[in-house]
Amino acid sequence: MLKLLGFPASNYYNIVKMALMEKGAEYEDVRVYSGTSEEYLAKSAMGKVPCLETPAGFLSETSVILDYIEDAVPGPSFYPADPYERARVRELVKFSELYLELPARRCFGEAFFGTGPVSQEVKDSVRPVLEKGCAAVKRRGRFSPYLAGDEITYADMVFLHSFPMALGVAKIVFDWDLFEDLPEAAALLELLNDRPTVKTIVADTAEGMKEFRKNYGMKD
Image 1 (cartoon, rainbow, N blue to C red):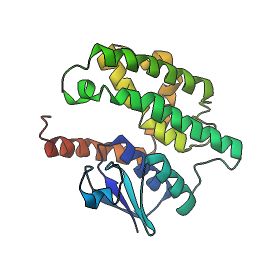
Image 2: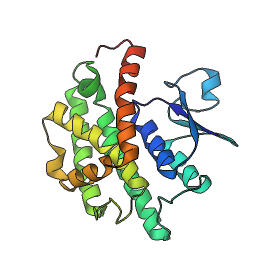
Image 3: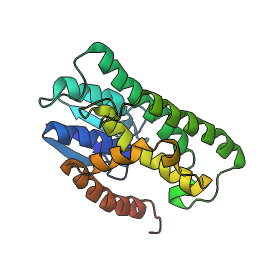
Image 4: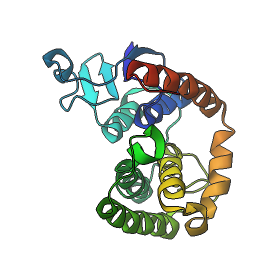
């Protein structure tokens, strides 16, 4: 059986969890908060979550795990059959990963964890990337009704767990509403949040965040 290593407060963990649930896969949750022990680094070379234990060994990096799930796990496909359309989905995945979630992550401490304000230098470098990221998704996304077309794909799963993080950072750190830059996102998020898998993940995440804060000695 597949084993998903990570914790429900991690948006990247939740991307993989959603993919497994949408596939109807049997898997086991294994709670891990990342680590630097040699034992864990043998599983996830960068010490990060999520990490997926497969019958053949361990895999890390979310987009790599998604490709494995697509190839190895029975169930519906979340990549188009056409090579070009499949590449477009991967392109949209990268836009969400690299130009929405990743830059926003530099401000997570101020936005979500109460660790104090980030420097103006960081803010000045983060905002332009978020602006370009939103513009790229707007140019390449179809929103008809899903990000890449009329069927849900991995691009939607990654966007669902990336854009809201950028949205929160923009609002709290910059007093900026990303929906003004990407208004199409509102309907897409509403559509995705209505899926049974997402409702389960949202509930699990709320509990997982409490567990995460307790584990790291944070106040609610």
